[in-house]
Length: 193
Ligand code: OGA
Ligand code: NI
Image (tube, rainbow, N blue to C red):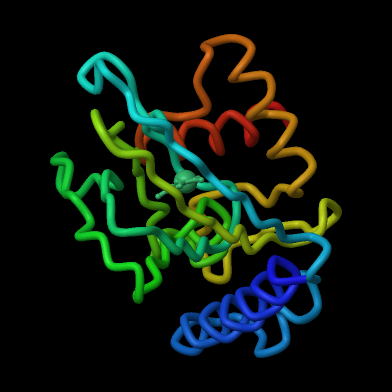
């Protein structure tokens, strides 16, 4: 019941934040209400065991999130890093704060105004770490279309995007490694269609 309550609150917050970010863009006020539901989003509980060889092993490999935005709650251990201007920046751990990341779909929807952030987790040598990530997602049928013209991205459905990622993971063992890959991934969707 605690997890359910947390997910409900995270969903409420994610929707409000998504709507707030949409205010200065040509996105309908009820866009998120229409395309997202609590059952289209998900909560992932992460446990990172201590790793004796942190330089050889990531907690999570560099990636971007497949969603509109992610709300991360973490303990005091730390290890989350964001890629900014080509450099990894550590997020200061604060169990009382939430970290909000933009995901791929908000990048496409906002036509590149908001950037899907590449991030990773560095393993800790001594201490186990916990985090909870709430992925605010549309339903699989939702077609994501840039809110302005000329559009940097072809419109695509969540379902198509997921299938593309699955193909890429099979081919390369990795979803994406940086924002440029997001671009080409979406460009690839464009070519395929
Ligand atoms: C994720 C993620 C970050 C963290 O689950 O996609 O990036 O701090 N988690 O655990
Ligand atoms: Ni992530």
